[in-house]
Length: 60
Image (cartoon, rainbow, N blue to C red; front, top):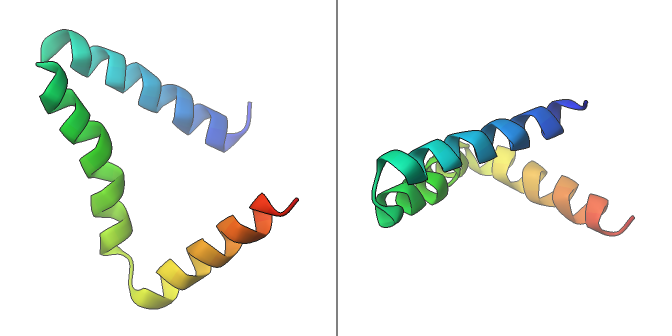
């Protein structure tokens, strides 16, 4: 299993646990807010590199 697949599986597991314990809107805010906060924590050059790599992989 690749590293990205492990991360995705962990994210799904955490999301399901949050949906059980918290109201759905709080779980939604956590699931959307954590990746958004991580993206905003990058400096501009890292954001450009991330967008460039993502676009390059989409063209495959």
